[in-house]
Structures are given as structure tokens and as C-alpha cells.
Length: 597
Image (cartoon, rainbow, N blue to C red):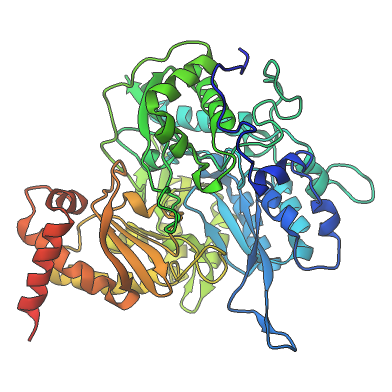
């Protein structure tokens, strides 16, 4: 149907579009001056290109710890680039992972990172190597197109390779279909990064759902080049996840769009459609807030791609394009209301949608350790702390991965908790896989503490431009301390999520975790409590501006209270939510007073 509407879009001429919107409009479908600046003598891109580059899968960054002083004593930025590979459902081959490991050694900072959205990131790429990095990723049939930017980003889904029924394959199939359908159609990506400068021929590009634009879907009256997105793409980034009620391993409620599978007799019969999740916050702007998604509707599997397209188009036409702080889908739904949004989605879709099925999230499997696939082969989930793949003294994960991929040739799946699954392992190879890991000083998942297993951090300082303080480099030490206190309290086996970010933008999803640690000032954090492992409830501020060294002492009294006052089977986040921050604070003050000499 036509996208014509009786409402006046929020993006009407009455509101001046933001500078980013103007840049996208004048970019000629994400081209801008990128190609010209790519070959100039500067080590950075200009302002007009920086936001456009995100759509191509790369961020310009400044390594704030490696700046140099100029003759005048001023600090000169140390420019480099992060390159993100979009991997729907986190599914790739051993050879593809090996290619990414080669890149991190040859043109990156020698490390690779699993993201919180089942992708991979190269860090430390300098400008003169940027085209080579992106081209080589495409050579192994992967892509960076739309890994960032104001578009549908990497589509997440449960990565488990269970093959005893059709459910998990159906999830992956939908992730692939959505990734392909919602991928930008502009040829700018191929022209800039994949065209041979001498022959003018396009080099091999990542195909299918991993990056190649799908054809068709020319909406009546729509844009010829970008029938879904148009010339200005979306108002802000858009994130989608596909999961299960008994396994919410992709944090469905944290996404702009979630499809929760409803299953009968080991087959998906439909999806609950969730909309409006998102965690970015600007502390100085009270109008911004984290939000978990709302249950909007139920759809059939056959309708899922069309429903996603309708949601994207409503966001495209009515999202805020004048104020980027208010441009996420969650704000549109907050302003207009869920009934309005559902009606508009139905209008774009062309028919009504049923109310959500009664089922909801009730479990979360991190898929670590050994599990049978159902086809005679095995899967092993390896905990990768904060997703960082590197070789260090006594711990050589990167070398271990190389050995496993070359010798055992497993399938590779990435999880939304930044871990790696090795799939299709024959029974006789199980011992060898563990032998390779242990031989390189890598702890098996069974040897990792429960609290570390359920922890997660963003990259933060010094390379993320938004970071206020540490996160990835700080959390391991904090977990070291927490392990000691949990053992002392007899809570070592208690499963609860601890997530840390270096700023309030929430990349590691701290706002629905049991314990959220959000950077607020240099070396200081907001401590949030009362979310839960299931991910369907926001936490609340317990203490603000807590110094890094005081985080564990702040948590210990609450954990002691939990140990003594929990009800049978009660989880930590549920306990904190039930008691409330005032009660937790009073008990903690008394606990500290009693413990003082």
C-alpha cells in the first residue's frame, strides 16, 4: 500500500532538521565526500563524512591516551578507526573468523572484539588501511554495511545450533531475511570500498543476508534507490532481535523491535512483536530515558518481514529528525502512545494485527559449556570476558582460536553476551578442543565464576568518543573483588547480571541488569539495582557518583541483606525490586555501622 498518511509526520517542515539530517540529505545516498577524503593527505575525515561513515560500518575515533603534544603545547588527536562487521545472528565460519584475526594483527591493534550485538570489531585501524580492511572483510563474504548508522543494524537472534527441531533454524532464517530486506540499497558502499581503482570493477562483496542489498520492494510512491529508507534513512539507529520465551539470550526488551517466537509442537507458529526498547541516555537532557520494549501485537511467521518493514517505515516518517537526543523509536511511542503506533503500523501493513500472545520471557540461557546439538554433534560455549580476543602473558585466546579453527574447523556463533560458541564438534573432538584452550592458558567456561560469566562491559576509555570513564578495562578487577565477597557470603553460585558502561549511552545494556554500573564522571559511576537476568524490567538508581574503588563496598551490604532476607528461590534483582532503594539503603547503613570497629 501507499505510505500516505493522514497525520502530519514529526519531521514536517515546521521543525528544522538537525545537521545530521541535512548531511544525509545532501550526501547522495551516503556518498558525501568520503571517496575524495579517503585518498587525501589527512589522517582523518571531515565533519561531513564522519556521520556518513557510520552507515558504512566504521567510526572515526581518537585514542586519548596516545595524543602527542604540538610545538605550541596543544594536544593533537591520535586518529584511528573502529571497523564493525555485521553478522546476522552471530553466525560465521572458521575461515571467516581466521580472516578477521589476520586483519587485527596486520592492520588493527592486534585484538579483535565480540560485540554485545553478535558482531565483530576491529580497533586501531588507521585511515590509509581503512579501505583494505573493509574490502578484505567482504572478500570472505562478510560485510560492514549498516553495522552502524541510522539504519537497521545487526539483527540478533538466539545463536544456539539446536537441530532436534526446526525452531532455531527458523529463528536464524528470519534474522537472515530481515538483515537482507532492511539492508540499504545504495551502491555507494560498493563504489567507495570495493571498486578496483584501476579497472573500475567491483571486487567480491559479502553476499545475501550478510551485506548484499536485496532487490525489489519498490514501495508505491517511494524512493527509487532506497524504497524503505529514502534519502535521509532513519531518524536514528534501529535494532532488532529475535528470541524465545524460555531463552531470552538476545535481550528482546532492549531492542527497538523484538520478535518473540511462539512455539507449538516444536515449530514456530507466530511471534509476539515488541517495540520501543532502547537504552541511550543524555544525563543533561531530562527528556531522555532508557526504556524496555512494549508488547504491541502478534503476527504470523509469514507476516514477520512485512511487519518489521511497516515498523521501520512508521519510524522513518514520524520519528524526530530535529533533535537527535529524542530521535529513537522509544520517544515516538512515548509521545504518541502504543495504540496510535500499532494503528499506524497496521495502516502501513494493510491489515489488522492480533493482540500479543499471553506467553512472555521466562528463561535466559547463556549457552556456555557443552550441549548436544541433536544431530550427533556438540556445541561448546566459551566465555570471552568482555568480548576481547587477544594474546597476553599466560593467556593466549587469539592463538587458541587460530588453532581450533585450523584444526577442528568448527562452525562459529557469537552471543549477545560477547562469548563464542564452537558448533558441529564431533564427539571425539571434544577433548581436543578443551586441550587446545587449556594449553593456551584459556579458562574453560566451567572454570569461570558465575558472576564473571554473567558480566559484560562496553569498550569505553580511551577510544570511544562518548566515554567518560573506564569500563572494559575496569570491570575484570571489580569482578575479582566481587568474587571474594560472594564467596565469603556463600553466594558464589548465585546468577545475576553485572553490566558496566563508560557513559550513560548503555551499549552493554546496563539498564535492565541486576546490577548496572554507568559511568557518570571520571572514575565515578551510577550504581543501579533491581533489573533482572530476564531483561524485561528496568533497574533504578541506588547510588550516584560512586568512586570505582567504592563499588564493591557499596554492593556488599545489599548482597548480605539478600542472603538473609530473600524468599525461597528469589533472585537478586527481584529482591532489590521488592525491597526498593530506600529500604536497601537503610539496611546497608545499619550493616556498615555494625561492621565498623
